[in-house]
Image 1 (tube, helix red, strand yellow):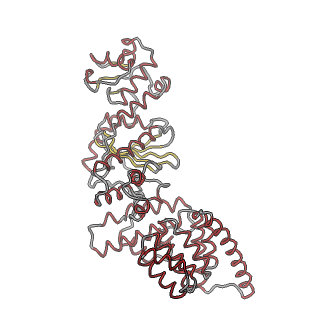
Image 2 (cartoon, rainbow, N blue to C red; image 1 turned 120 degrees about the horizontal axis):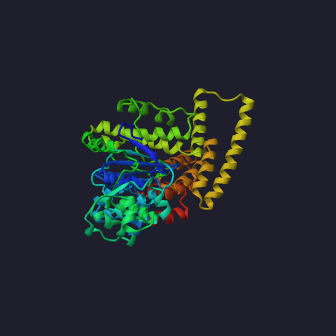
Image 3 (spheres, rainbow, N blue to C red; image 1 turned 180 degrees about the vertical axis):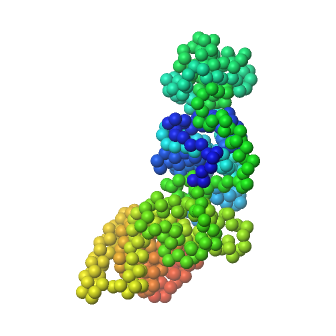
Length: 507
């Protein structure tokens, strides 16, 4: 998270639900963000002068690529070839530049997405929050969602008893925030509560006396009207201390640089999207040198190989925020290239180590590499036993993976085929089938090609492996490379009808 400062305010959703925080931000005309966390759920809601302007969440809300597919702007095959297609912000910029999305359509999508996030957060009854006045959303990312209507509907959805619990006494005071004759869409009870306020500020007890309503009805109506911004509330125990409001308003004058909305990659959707604190005392130069000299992914992340998953995740997000290539676009070309290369290594490290299965396989690979480098092979008698055991284990894993792949479950197959390939890396069949399983997921595209190429390097005469590589090239639209691979296959096996037909079809 952003480094803590004296202006940050924290609390729980149980004590102060998000609806009240949003109402207080509006009443105080405050800017900044509210970061919310409930177990695995994370969200950030941004405000500007009291208005709710944007929100992000790690919940799988409507995504821009879903919208693009629904509107038939692109086919699924075309979409997956776009870089960062699961990053809504970058995809929007790409589609705008290509003329496939209009500004109006982009605004409509982001408005719907922000609205869905806000509706979700309004329902949270547990979790923690922090108000940070020094956070700003990037210019141009402002959604017009009419949050006041959402807050009012939230207030009306509560039972009279639940609304009454949000008050501590009948001494709280209310006054009109707008002219009485400008207020529309009120319930009959809300209208009765508003009438006494037309003449003067009133406490809850006086409003109840003037309206002849039960106390619970008065509380319920006032709560909805306050959330809607139609009345101003005072004399209650607020989440934001009144004495702090002038300092929170002034905080925006001290902001040196606009905060940038964090980018969300598809593999990060299960992780926090909140702003992450930078790694202390790590300069860009030190980060680049460390990454370029790293012997493994743990050194890229700067963590102990025995650390837990949370430490890995924190290290990745901290470094990604501090050294994202977008922050260095205006630097010298050589430096920009180094930053991009380092970030690619960082993303690969996170992708490989983020799940227990893939981390286990990576650790196994490191151990094998270390043994080979140190010449630390077991004694002759043990070597034969261990070799037989490894080959048997690899064969069993391959059989499991091949069956899953045949059933169309490439994701589950990847785990078993990876174990087979790592246990017996000189087995061309294991490497080829592992590459085939990886090719089902576009984010593993380069790794898939690497495994298929490794299989051909081990057994270059196999028509099966070259066909698998050709199909992979066709899938990722590299038709010239597919044509070259099929030509090489036919030079080795001129009577292969399947290869001939496939080559004719792509020509």
